[in-house]
Length: 226
Ligand SMILES: Nc1nc2c(ncn2[C@@H]2O[C@H](COP(=O)(O)OP(=O)(O)O)[C@@H](O)[C@H]2O)c(=O)[nH]1
Ligand SMILES: [Mg+2]
Image 1 (cartoon, rainbow, N blue to C red):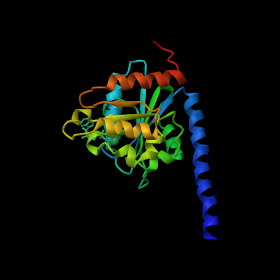
Image 2: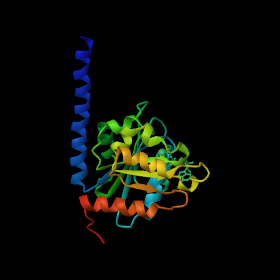
Image 3: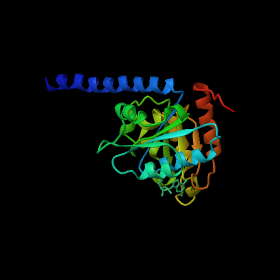
Image 4: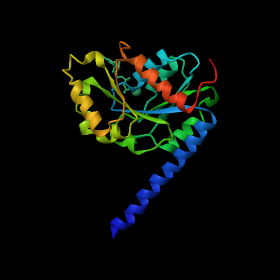
C-alpha cells in the first residue's frame, strides 16, 4: 500500500526536472550556446579540464561556466581569475545539479556572448547522471589515481556519457594504471564513447579532446565568426 503511493511521487519529481531541462534546452538554443555537463568524482580534474580546454580554444569560441558545488566559491573564483564568465551554484547539500538550478544560473550569465558553456557538476559518480540539465553533452572525467576499475564499479555515469576523459595521464606509471582494463570497462558499458587520455598538467592529449569537442559544437551550432 505504502509502495504504490510512493511511486507516483518519484515519477512526478523526475518529470518536473525533465520539463525544466527542456526549457533550458530552448534557452540555450535561442542564444546558440552549446552546453556540456562535466561529471566526475571530487578531485578528478573537472575544473582543470575546463581551464585546459580554455587554453586550447580558438579565440572565436567564447566560454562560460556554471560551477556546481555543495558549498564554497573556490572553483568559481578560479574560473573567474582566468577571465571566464562564471556562476557558482551551491546545492546546500544536494549531491548533484538539477535542471531548475541550471535555469536559475543561466539568468546570471551573458548568454549572448557565450558559445560554449561548461557545467561542472557536483563531485559524485552516481547521482549527477540521473538528472537531465538540458545540456547537449554529458562527459565523465575519470582520473588515474582513482584506479582503472571505475567504469566497472560506476557503470551508470559511463553509460550516460557521450565521451570519457581519463585525466592525470602523467601519473599512469606512478599508479601502475592498467589503461587496457580501463578501456575494456568503458567499451563494455558504452562501446561508442570516445576515450580521451590526457593530462591537464602537461596538456598532453588536450588538443585531441578540444578538436572532438569543437566538432560536436559545430554540428549543433556552427561558428558564424572566423
Ligand atoms: N598530476 C596531475 N594532477 C592534476 C591533473 N589535473 C588536475 N590535477 C590536480 O588534481 C587536483 C584536483 O583538480 P580539480 O580540477 O580541482 O578537480 P575537480 O574537483 O574535479 O574540479 C588539483 O590539485 C589539480 O592540480 C593532471 O592532469 N595531472
Ligand atoms: Mg572543481
